[in-house]
Length: 487
Ligand SMILES: [Ca+2]
Image (cartoon, rainbow, N blue to C red; front, side, top):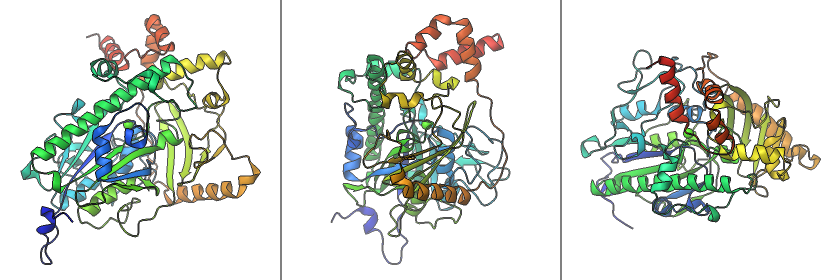
């Protein structure tokens, strides 16, 4: 057995040395890494981390878009319970008494908490939670709402430290073409393997390849951070957690309770051991929060719905997923996922999967291509699933036989007992997670106005978008705002 410095320093009299903890959060990715068998992508740094650590094959977020999912992880409690389930809502409302961001507890226990990194794209400082918060400063939950102590740099004097670093590159943005054009090994669109619910079309292959280019860029950023740890002599006392904040931004992914929306990569590297372990049990993203407090040697607060993953008593049968408001689409869907089954209840079946949400019109080239193919009658039955005029009221999938969730068994009498069990489980979890408050204060999305403006004022670019070209949402927002202010 390797003698690690922090183990040597432990004796019966001394408390164990607290490890540094780095939480890397990649935006909008499903299991799209080489170590999860995604074709055509190379992720050597994350492959190595998985080989030296623990790779989780069944980790699920509790909501498939940024802010509700991140709110849940920040508190370690399901976003529904803390009334943070509506995207970009309630930003002026403090968390209810007794609930605290987990960084509060880390700070109470001697950790320096750090947000961002000096070397990653955009500095990795995104927070995006649906309760009153500030990036830096103290927290008391009443007049002070700071989540972290400092930005961008971890140093010896910060030890033990916790750093949360956002890896934004995989989020759709105007930089995607640039990243691809500068890649010395751009992903070959002919080598990608598309899921069966996407049409095999050159534009869709190109978009998929471009997405994988971003994943490779992100992997390089992980490599850079690992190198910095090595150089600073922190590699042997730093736990590294890698996760996606929600699934990939494509059909059935981000925004949906289907597998690509909820199912995320999770790799935990602990220099003390567990090397090369693969775990297939079900884990919720909120469990990561509890695991971090566990690493810090702390008890888990009673309000947390997450549980420490490495506790010998850890056992989770289901992850409860919800999808509620996102911009102008006020959805209401609930799901439970086990290792073998997925059940989804769609309380608003009249809102189709293709809900024509303004923001997403800019950011899903496959959607525009497939809408046209659908109008021409050129989609097969798996590809058509997304374009049904209504959602099914209930969906039931056998994940073992049908990992792409193509065959809805909800109306198959053979599976009625499973359906009834999971339906009841969903209701039970919804009751358990009943929100502690009913404040509802959403932010008005600007994408609707920008989309209308592009239609009216930039018909050429709008037309391009309908052909599957990403026309640059962020640039257009800036232009629209400049026009609005007349400056
Ligand atoms: Ca995200």
